[in-house]
Image (cartoon, rainbow, N blue to C red; front, side, top):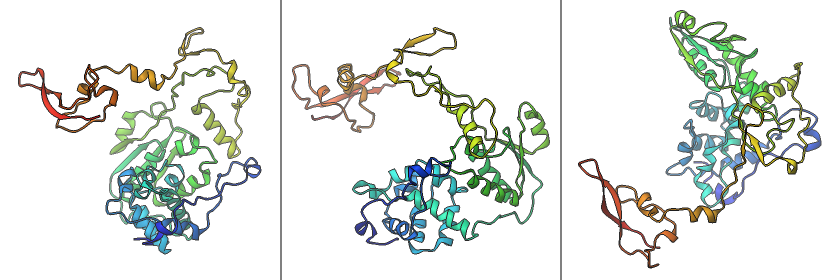
Length: 375
């Protein structure tokens, strides 16, 4: 494990400092400054090597978090990146963009701030790139299989890299003018600079992955044509159709969908010329002047009342009297029930068992005796 007393010596999270605001507003670069390695290793040493590391289940990828925390604390960065790459194709993406459910699941977070797992992850991969430790891994031999991957977002890139390294000939089709999908045109530059994406794409091209940009699958080329040309087709597409948010003020000038704004903003950040660029003009209108209704349809005047959030008191008052019966699960397992609904009509506390629903052999629903509740 990492430092056996690390979580006792260091009890607080230590994150990188943010760049000063007067400096940040002059460019589109990332917000945080580089963190001192000694501070990061001290944070990695807080990992307790739990008997049941819930961070594994909290991570959608199943990252071997305690293992590379220990290696980072010891300074064995080469082994740390090997363990990180064992379950994650692109830790430089997830280390910046992932909401870090692993930190929410960290056992140390029960009574202390959780380990800064996400920061250890991104530092490990960045040190590997700096040390030339991330090299192309072309296959030793090629198979006779060809695969078309439609979409070059994170899912499409991951499957393309795995299939290429397995020896298949892989072509990635992207509708936009550059590959990357969501990573390029949906993530702001200050969250992840596009040089990070281009660096990984260069590695994939060196491994043998072929990228076809500016191809609209379904328009320029049909699905039947892809199936005829390739042995397999992987659909890893996203959605560019926004879902409107029905809130007061949605109709103001300058309030636009992120799907419309972010691609333009990312193009401007890398120096592209954008025609009819969306700006924030009119976005400073005071919210007090917003009407009480918000649009829900395409036709002018198609409105509906704005929804108000119910108060806690009204929500409790609307609960039915037979709530314990409805919440009673099968198998005798307890379910939390509000104390107000654990009394009989005379106001006395319920001491006996609650009847719980049970399905009979004839398909009807009867009741059986279950374990009781106490207020």
